[in-house]
Image 1 (cartoon, rainbow, N blue to C red):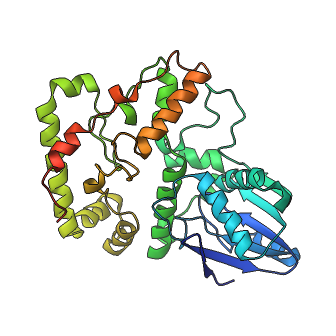
Image 2: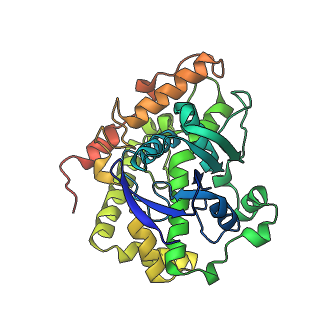
Image 3: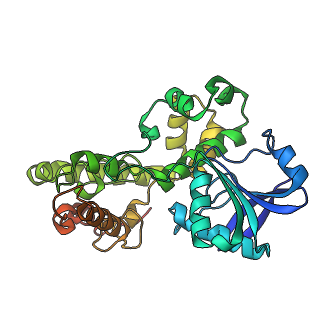
Length: 334
């Protein structure tokens, strides 16, 4: 079953298709689609099995505007239009189950049958309780125990993987974090007292790599230190931009990869766009009215409306981009 590429909504979708019969759209889990998985053959004997790699997974491209499960659901509705499919059977596993649920609620007339297997993200518990643990903060061995009945059998062995397979695995993990990981939301709910504590909304310094968070009261008293730190960060970014080997060779030594594998991962997951920090359209900009500002505002309003916090949060008091603007003033990308 060789993969093909199909242009959908300015995305190059990697698409696996095999078998004949009623169309069955299969939406894979966080690990991606593997045509060698045991369910593929029996499904393709009865159905026309259509299995895309989600945007940012496998060899599918990831546009800058896409950063949510909701976005992917709309992409797949357009995929159905491109394939001229009016009605499908739909199976989704893990995050694929979440996408399937979103798709089915948007166009229920197009889904004849729906099967969701462990659909993470479909919240059924109370608003102030976490339905699933934060898997990004857990050791991988513990995550595998939660995901699989036989974790030893299902845990990938890096020593037996090709460089391409390693790069795909890391790319899949990076994309799943982009789509679903919001650690500030967990901390906000736990703090839940009309305060944004140790969150993106309370940052004086922010990057999309390590989230260097600083409390505003500390920032007011230590502004010079914060400025020196940011200038050093920008200087390091400029050095890496001129010679990427500085970054991926060091990372390769740290995690035990070959330089070639680390370079491939680096090409797929490049460093943060530091010079875009003051661009209001950039996802991680702190500019008032930007994407991060809006998302925090929506979240704060939601929590206040449902009584998770006692009063709304004034984002203008919480968010501060003056440091970033001062450091980047007059500087140009190398």
